Length: 484
Image (cartoon, rainbow, N blue to C red; front, top):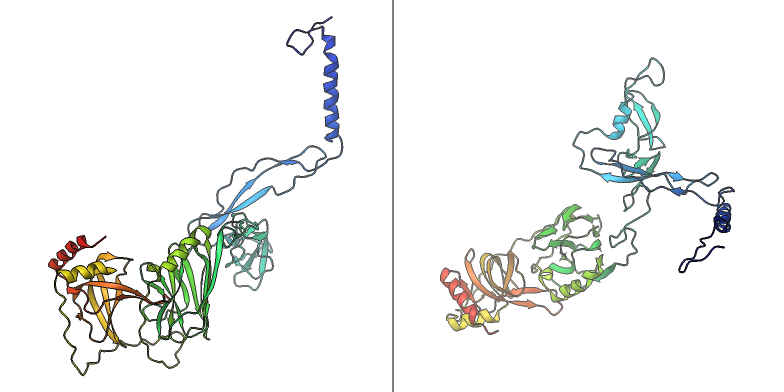
């Protein structure tokens, strides 16, 4: 008899002791094969091989197709695999050079000079786009009133002259956001392919605030990363759009821009103005920098609707920046506009600056503001100290407005633009500023309670000295003595 060695689970007896186990394994294998229906009817589809690599693009310029394939592996009696053997992906290359022949033109031209409808007659062929099936190679005989279909076009041929779809196996397909032809994948409002709008927030408001005077008013900051931007109103007012450096994209500097598509912050801005009092602004985004939406008021504001989608992580900073009235909410100051007759929607009457009316009484002399103590008081107590050149002045109501070009900034609580307005109280400001002269100015920031006006104010008897190297040195020295 065989013996079992210690620590082993196998008989070391003669071979007949092993046979029952081998027979049992054979029966188990046979039972498994029968239950898996190797010898019976199929119980499901076969299996796909892994996808092959993508082919090169079907076009040498513009857009075309790249394809990959796989094979179905199935045993006798099994069903076909579920799915497609080929998958097509959109590929984009550099734009085709001007004058390049279209892909469909080249396919029609292959039949030029070859007998098609008879052994003797030949024709010259050009594409014909009026046939029912766009993905058939329908070609018109030049000089004749008929066309002929040569079967399907090659894969990757545009469906029509102005279509974004491409022909694939005789069908006109468009690419999803995943790049696959015929895919239903679409970007959500947040810009995520196949997303559910859960990674961004929808901002939708109506701006109704505005004063009684005409001019530019801030509507909203449009932060970097905003998508699907829309603004609309029904009035004779005009929407204006400003980029971060203070330059206008639309309707700036008291001039109305024509309707059309404009480039701003990395996106296309579509500006429309109907024959009636309706104006809209659309942009797909995402914006590459902050934008400032304003309105140029000519009549009372009936309300401006605006909306956009913003990434969740940018919503908090957007709220803080808007409430802080930083650079993004600083605006060119309004000016008086006299009532205008009804005007065409494409022209905005520009009112020339009024020439100052001489006062019947001479302006009284200004107080003496010389001395180190005066310089120290205004430098330390002001929000802005800068060197500027006076470009223009305008007396309006009980104020004087200077237009200045900022040359050098010594102190600033928030960024200054290259061109600013500085306001001084009264028709006889003290000290007065002369045109085309450079001054060293100390200004304060004045914000109205509702946040719609944001001005640089030169106080009465404030600090405004003609700039010189000596004044520059005194200013830099005084900055060291301000209390912390």
